[in-house]
Each structure stands twice: as C-alpha cells, then as structure tokens.
Image 1 (cartoon, rainbow, N blue to C red):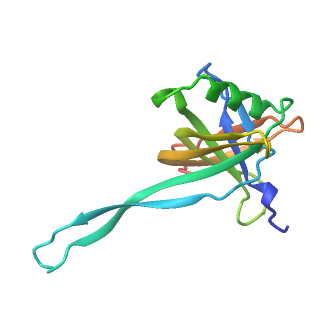
Image 2 (image 1 turned 90 degrees about the vertical axis):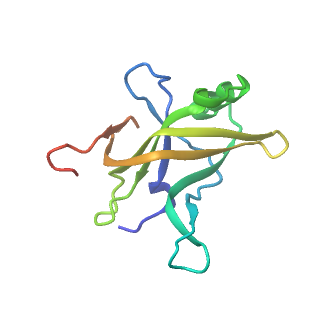
Length: 164
C-alpha cells in the first residue's frame, strides 16, 4: 500500500475533560509539518577549552491552518476556544497523531501527547484561514488506533505487560 498524506491525521480531544476522550480530526487543514525542535543546553566542561552545546530533548511543534467553515466541528471548537482568549493551562489539550503502521501502511498507529498546548496565531478572513500552533509538550505515548465506519476514533494505550 502506498503511504499518502491523508493517512496522517492530527486530532484533538474536544471532550473538555468530561472523562471520555472525543478525538476530532483537524480536517480542512492546509499545513502539516511536524518539526522536532531540539532543546539545547550549553555546558562548560573543564576538559574542553570551549563550551559544548548538547541536545537535551525535543519540543515537537505542528503549525496548522484550518479553512474557515462553520459546518466543520473542529473549526467550531477552535474558533470558540480561541475567541474566549484563554491563556496557560486553558490552552492545554490532549493531541493524537494517527499515522500509518510502517509495515502495513494502515492508519493504526497512534502517538499521544497528553499535554499539547494550542497557540493561536491569526484569523485571516480574506484567505479564509485560522492559523495556530500545537506545541507537543511532555512525553509521547505510542499506542494503537481504531477508526470505525462512522469515523469514531478510538485510541488504546500500550499495555503495561507488552509495552507495545
């Protein structure tokens, strides 16, 4: 099976902490570029004449532009959220990236960041786009995803016994 761009599906949990995750795809997006931004620290080791910079981790970020469409559930969710002018923890939401299994090509892999932070950028009514960043904070959990025929997305965390 040939991997295509639509097999990578970014999703936000729109349940607002109600207890059961409701994964909604960020559809009508015109941008999908996951970048792994390195976190770096500089150290002064006595065995080196010059300071040394080392990568201590990564802070992935996913810039997004979503086309204005008041019939789209994700657009409605983001518009209401951003127009409330939230800050800090009010912009933290779980983020799920559904991606193809590298062996089968089927969209069954799920990467979950439980502490992703939304960062609104702009609302361009001329171009018809709402722009924002998703900062993928904290650790990532790799589980499995099932997508039902009605489009419901279910994420299953790795089992503690198998680690898969």
